[in-house]
Length: 171
Length: 171
DNA sequence: GGCTAATAATTCACTGGTGAAGTATTAGGC
DNA sequence: GCCTAATACTTCACCAGTGAATTATTAGCC
Image (cartoon, rainbow over all chains, first blue to last red; front, side, top):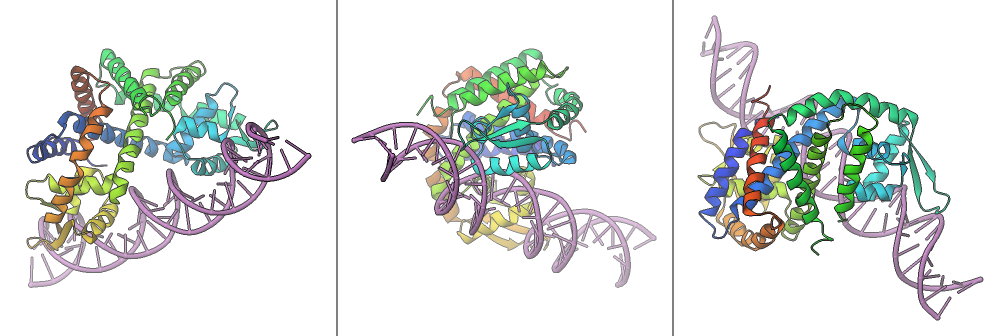
């Protein structure tokens, strides 16, 4: 992975140059969206590199975590799709993999035989409890550049942003 | 695209449940990284949907914009890779597409015949000037939930974050 | 000057994710 | 009760992005 500083510098220079060329460029907004995409992409790659030794990517991991953190340890593909912003096609593939590794089970729901009931297994829970804690120090380090106040501010702003982006809120 | 509010709610609930289950979970950091990934992914999908009528995705667009906003309107694949956090393989494919559409030209550099010189064409510049302005209002609307101060704060925090994540800064 | 190592770009085989179509099941109107 | 529409999931064919190997060229060392 290459260095980010040149990217950030080039971004600011590029936006300035375009703004001097095309009228009405919303500079701050362009910078915000690009910085957001850049940091997110960096975090995601980094995280996936960390999961790779366990033969997992972020989608697999998130899906497993959603089951782990669900009230009953169970859910359905469509529910997970909604919460993970995933397409059903992909969820089928992911749950296939997780099931093959013995981390989850898939059974047809009795009350509605169209639905598939996904349930995390003891092995799956064990895997999560093994996997997570070693990741904490590095995660904390990632945000070490922020004061507690700044972390809270960032969280508040991002949460507000997510809810504002919600299509249900502004159709 | 489904609604984001359930995702955000489930995220907060899930993190709480996991934290009650596994000791030492850095709750704020987990929320931050997940909110960041969620908003970024939403923005990206949204933006790509907007580019689709023009047969473009964000990578293509960003590559074209980097050339548009570069000092000379030209660059090389490896330089663009570094600034766009892209792999050379993919850059070859992207520049192939852009060249096929007549938006850029590719010539071998004279001073170093290993390099390829990419240059935006008049047609490419024209395309950018047509494409950009109609996107401004919607982009501004996306960030309308923030005050000017909040936008500046978010930009400052994200920039700081990007530079902190830089592997060169913390090896 | 010639040999080795490094660099720039490309090709190829593969993975992850998507849209569109298909299958099974349930819900709703009459 | 039956027919149509809707829902839940799956399958299939395809696109975008990646790592590993390849080719072409240059740089550096002796």
